[in-house]
Image 1 (cartoon, rainbow, N blue to C red):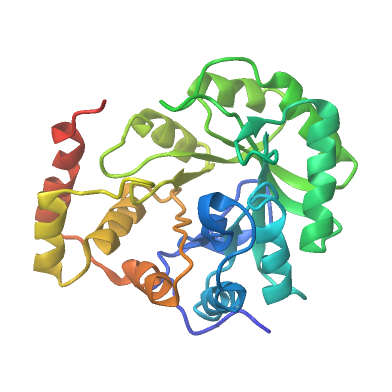
Image 2 (image 1 turned 90 degrees about the horizontal axis):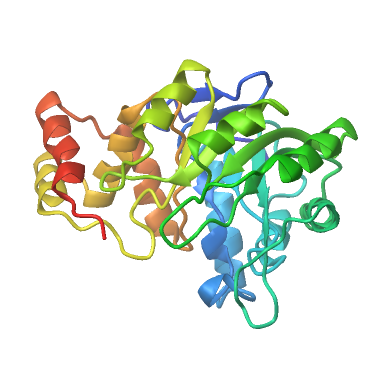
Length: 301
């Protein structure tokens, strides 16, 4: 299997190279969380369909897959291996640590050195890898977003695992600007993954700061997450451009800054194709002005 050579710069949003690395990805990637069963627990209802979605993504030129071994748990990584191993040259798999899924299906912190180290080995085993391209430390935070507090111990553990050759590069997820600075004092950070979309723009200053340093910003919930983006403005712009509202929301993120990488997730081939096609949507200055007004009109609760 090889990555498609037919998908050009424009169709997948162009390319981005993680700072200080040889890892270059298309800006439209794929988030694998929805490949697990309901509630990100257990196997999917359609395992063959999950394999098909992954293979379709790679065939479309996607070479950035976001995952975590606590999705399932273990299920999503095992499906990625089943679908794509041996992995095509140029495929970048980004995983994350910091959570665990006990039998009650809750999400619990997993932040001790021993658990973080075990998590790296779980990812290696289930993905069939000798080293992980990028590992994000995901701070649990709260339902309202990132929560301040030192992450030095956890980042130091990952830096040690990097020195041992088990991790190639380190990123962060669900963190504040203060935590990013703390981590950067310990090791090189290549990406930050936070909640961000058209209506949820608290990280605007952080995105701009990371862009100045060439560090990737990867929004999770780019389409609103569990409560999809709903906006009459978004729908109006989409109708005018002959696109879907979700394609326009993704196109806006690509336009927001060159360091923004997308990882929309889906378990549907049709939805995957819709997401990938967002790279072909061109936003006019008038459309951008309208879309930029959505956040101002959104009342955060």
